[in-house]
Length: 183
Image (cartoon, rainbow, N blue to C red; front, side, top):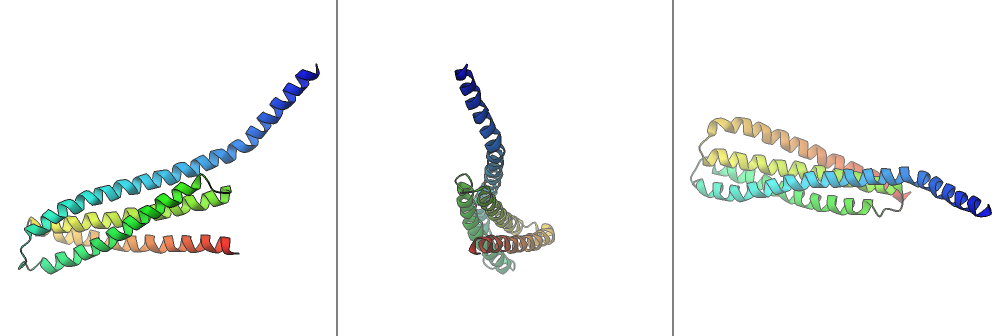
């Protein structure tokens, strides 16, 4: 009879501890999934931008150096290059933060790493979109589709504004998290 009480007591303790730990484990798993999803989306955008860059090199060579649009192309490609570097660095940061979610010391720290991963992934994604739009601009000039340039310029301006705001938001998030742990 004592043995049954012991078995039921152990089972009760195990089930009880599972119920106490399970929601936190589920939340951690959600954070891991969210961070991984954000990184995956950013990776796809960066890969798409990488392919666009390869195509852009060929398009750039199609534009004569004496073209009146050549300086515009150079300026757009300079912006694309700057955003490409930001996208790559941000993707690396997103991956690093996402990798720390599962090993974080607490749920709060895991949540902060997941937030950093998502914010970094957003910066990478927006930078990659600027690259894609830049290559669309080069494509329009290389293939003499000047009627599309106005729309592409607007899209580029909007993308640059969004990218700038996303970078500002990332810096705010990073600062708030750093302040949280420096107290």
